Image (cartoon, rainbow, N blue to C red; front, side):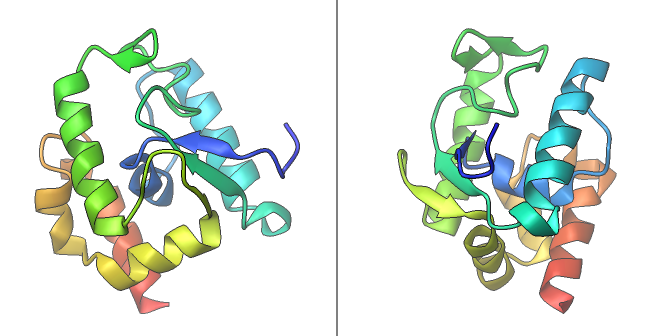
Length: 140
């Protein structure tokens, strides 16, 4: 996939990508997430990867065992996560934003403890990876 091809992200996946530390739902999911994060977002050559905001299954959802077509078996919970994240980060369906701009919005608009509300219901919240990543981002 060329670096100029936008990734497709649900709104809550911006924080998932920021906090990702090599763990996932399955081996296939972890391999895909690692590719997205380490090759497309954290690689200096592609650090400003464009991302298209979507409200259906995205690049991260593709290998997820909870995916059901273009949705999720946990769609009610996921849609609520997306709504909260979209509002806080000022993201709209169909919008294209660079990863550097997304990181800047996270830095300016989200404090680590905000995740208790923003990410309520996420099974990864208690792991603390995303809070740690937001704190590091805010600290520079």
